[in-house]
Length: 137
Image (tube, rainbow, N blue to C red; front, side):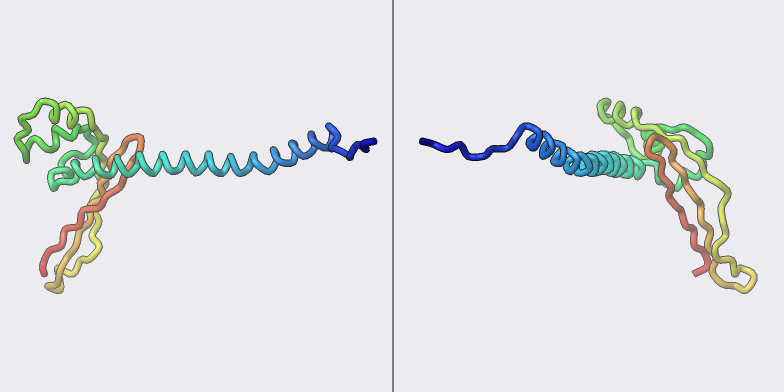
């Protein structure tokens, strides 16, 4: 005669499934949050590369303007390829430049002077850049 060995009851199985679920849910939430941050950082880095198209000396003349990359670069480059022109025209930023700040002002003593301009490029992923002008060295 065979004897039946004890097995798990359905209640024990359900309790173990609930415990595993409660342990996995926070792990999935952390993974999802990390995924969102990775996507944000990736998009932000792409925008930083595009922002470099706007950081010429002439950018200081465009306070409170909305400019495309093509409008900024056409003064410096002759872009013959129409596909390149279209790509540059799709990239646009709102430009805001607050008043300049003197960070080193010793002109009355005959020393060097330094002025900084803050350049804000506003869009979905806004950025702030600084333009330093050093004189008298």
